[in-house]
Image 1: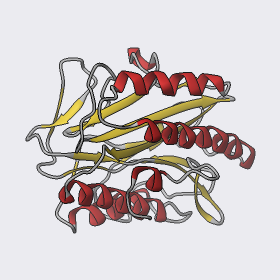
Image 2: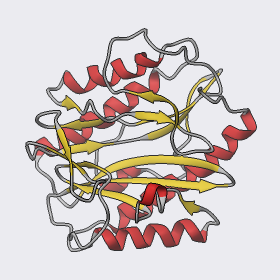
Image 3: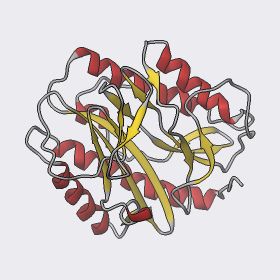
Length: 262
């Protein structure tokens, strides 16, 4: 069952989402060669708790950290540790925040220093795919209109969609109905309506779409070792169109990361 939220509940989710954006900005400003993913995790947890919130991921089904930090060919769910960032890496950072009973969920893939042109094109394409998906989060559309828009924006430039991972509903719980594939024919699935809140998150690869789960039972990487990018927003469907909840005044993650505007 898809849980629709009241305007007041969406405002509370926006406060959680704002904290997600500020946490990602804090991490983005700290990313540089030599920094470990464990150091980024500690930075994020301290900041989230200082704002009276909880890191949603920590303890979720036994997950041991406050953020997911997934470098290079790792798609998602990377457990922070002693991995030391190097010039030319890319790092997907996924953040979940629970504040006043509601969850915000967002992700951004950051370049570490200068990255090669193909890696930059991968990141730019994934960001465009997220924008395309968000644009379809409108009352009266169908769920797979989001899926199809993401697929078109990804495969047109020659990248692949990870088909075994999905976006999801979000609200009082981190994972609510519906699941949101990043591919598929348009016009299918539940009709979208005002009050629905969705975590839209393209996960795209430079090579094959195939992935595998590491022995830690969390981290997921590309089978062919190709780079992967992941961007995510929590979005509310309103009578006026899609409203991105994981933003904050004065926070520009593209500028922080040195990526192009958009």
